[in-house]
Image (cartoon, rainbow, N blue to C red; front, side):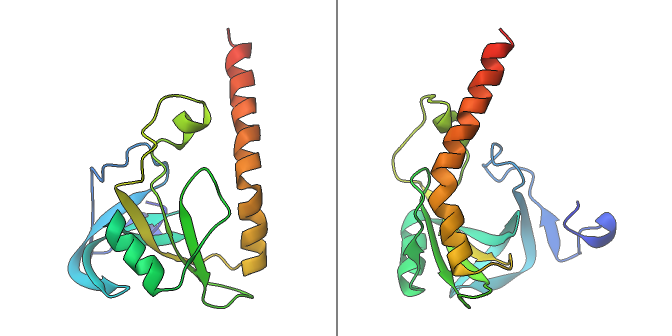
Length: 160
């Protein structure tokens, strides 16, 4: 549990064994001892994913939050992601993004469900970055993912 100092989970969190996102690497989900309110909605579950602290909401509720919080769609085609910087020069960024359970399969051209997501993660990214830096990285995300797929395919072909 690298998320917590000393490896001990705080008493107010209980790890969730099955958060329905087994294929999302790095997602750690916890039930809260007491409910909290995030963007006006009560929750008893919170997740950590890299620099994100998020709650999972059904798609309609996430869209309502996106609209209420004035988030914009990020320039990423592979996934649905929205953002708004609290401070455009240094963050943090609030945002919403679709689960990435099938991202690798999609990149490799495997059959995956491409309909709108059933849920989205909504929360805050605490990486110190400017809005310009984020948008620059987001505009390159699809090309970087495409290059990674080519590398993976090349490695798989080399093993045959």
